Image 1: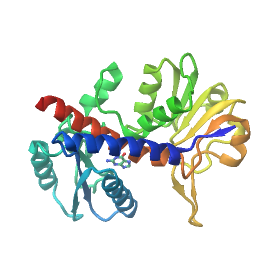
Image 2: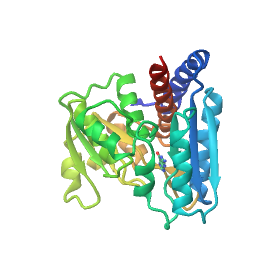
Image 3: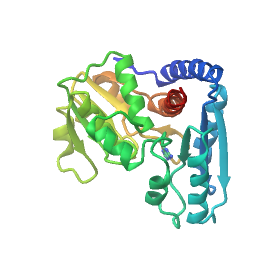
Length: 284
Ligand code: GUN
């Protein structure tokens, strides 16, 4: 059994990002990411702080907008408009979830697809489904990078995705399909889930329930990817996979923490660099 080391791989991706950021800077393009956080959600504050720190460490300029909870939808849309039109900014990220009085759909739609480094805009979703180049959501993209880095071939494999969120499950399903896997899309309403998971060569679990995937649901030799980040009442951080028992059956497995999580931010930086490269190519 091999543990997929997301911490080490994310450090490698970040060092590539930093090198490319310096090269772009020397060509007159300073890669820049604008991050917007609305409100005081503690988890979101932590994520946004990590994104800012990662940018700083990789020579990417970060422009932070921390807005109060009572920011109106129109104020937020107006700020996004300004950032859309600012040629010095390559990426725009609005941290989700947003306060209830703001429509996430409207906000996502308002971000220029060319600066949508989260890959959430319908244009980028469509590009992904059609196999056209565009921005791909960071968590599933990071998982694909793990597969390639560890030489895990997906062609003809039976992959089972548990969870159908727009951020992870749905893009993951499409990335696996584009990589020639046969994909089962399962979710909280799926009947007889373990009959499906037991057949899978690759399992991606993104359902947000601690220790949801148990060893009886896993085939011998499977690759198990745990996207879950759940905080138990005693404060410990656990994934959606019962790691200690499931690991015995796996060929590869991601730990929590130190697996998928660190890859997400690394791929956000990677997407920002990709956008800056597009800016340089346009300027040529
Ligand atoms: N909230 C949880 N994950 C994400 C993410 O990947 N991007 C944004 N913008 N918000 C999130």
